[in-house]
Image 1 (spheres, rainbow, N blue to C red):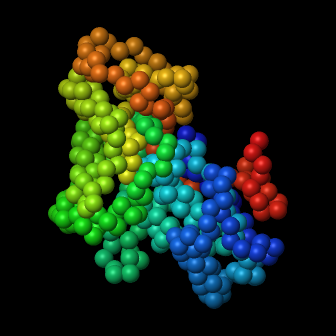
Image 2: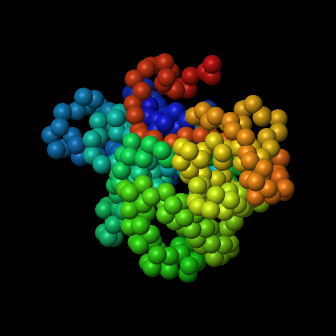
Image 3: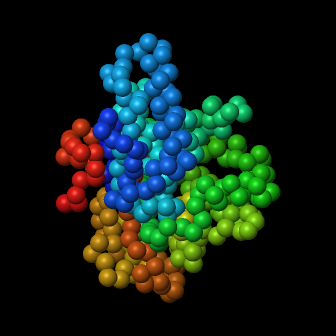
Length: 361
């Protein structure tokens, strides 16, 4: 079983169960990882619990012995892993979806995915998705809800500016746990600001209001990283290049006297830029100008094609003369994509008939 969100930015996962497997095993990007890690085992336990419940409810079980079988999982990302680009969310959403197909589970998978990565529940849906906090103490009503499908805002484009492909020193889960324990700003933000901001963001998406969408996106990103600095000991995910990207976006917008590009940073140094079709080519040119590519100039832009354009002298002057060659490793151009999908082509499976990863081509 495989599931992928979009060709330009995707996680591909294959899961298989067999009476011949002697233990649970997992491979990530071609390297075997510890299958006993608590988050992975939590997902497996929940999927198997749901499969047992389905059987006890009288549903026909096509694999009557499957619950005693061990599972092998192989997963590959085509973007940097553990670098602030939601690889855990994509990976655990893909894992939950693939395991559900293998074990015949048809219920909502939000809780399964959240056991691996909290934000993974959002990646189970395509388009624009809200993660609802819920009110129950056990968290069972903390689920994802699709606000709009991927087709809702076709003009919206997404650019990933890859600053670093290295694993971040502080993981998202550990960092958030420390923030919850020590940051007064995080508590204030969650109680006083987030509910209204969620409602406003939902409005922006539904009405395709890019001006308000972009400004709120940037403000919320800035505040998230302020809570990281308010954490004790402080957490700093942004790099000097990240901050230069922030300045670039604000200078770009100031030149046009309106918001034409918006940045957001998750728990990492890499930037996610939102823009519209009519501005994406000029913004890519602005990135090339401010961060001249080094050795991989011909591979600087990946994903969806973007036609090259020339910058005006006025915009070049507005961007400033402070350039950082090689500061951006490459750009991934994409757009809002669908949720998990099954690939039926056996040639695309990551595991061979023996349940082991296929040799790299």
